[in-house]
Image 1 (spheres, one colour):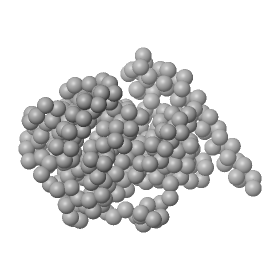
Image 2: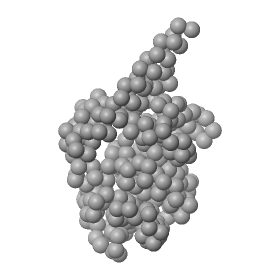
Image 3: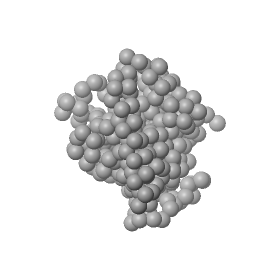
Image 4: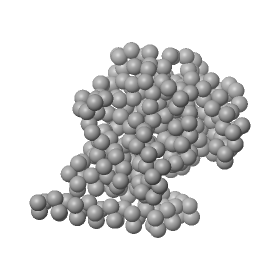
Length: 300
């Protein structure tokens, strides 16, 4: 059964019928398909592995969803960062960004070069975990467990369109609000306070923030104290992908690490310099270093 469409509530906020009424962390433990995270290091997860200068949690998408579901049941919030090559390159240049990523509760690799490099280094990351996939899998979990979600970011109308798609495909999902703040809002204390007030009033369990790195993750660091029981996901273009306003590459390109070629062909003016001048050389150097380290280790 398809849920009723999201309907306007207040400026900057859309509510689906019955949204945001389930207390955070109160869904109990009977969510279908959700398991306790595997035990490992303190906190119940395996130790992070370093790749491209970033410490990454070697988790599958399913494990990430299970981890967040368990934390929400316990009333504990957190922050998910999904570094790709571009984020790793930025982190390599700015210690403050390295600290921002390291402080996240979950750091999962959104980028096949990171997965390939980890395998060469003998500390394999099991799979690529993207914000564009998590927006769907976490929303499905949230629908089953009764946790409302909130969409923050994107051009006007895009988050609302994403909310309609998510509620149509995730039966029972409560989208407790959407917000598309104007460009430069984070430089205005007044506008930032309005964004904060709308978010807090909505009371979400999961917040998808699609503003691009590092803006989205800096904002999350500021907002977390206001919603300590919520999970924040820095998801980049995931809201636009979910809305259908930006096409996503076919599954085979995502699996083979060639999704960037699809995006480059779709938006050459915006992405050519980033992908070809900045990211590609960084990725090639990463693979060369990983091969060298693997060869050196094998000779010992």
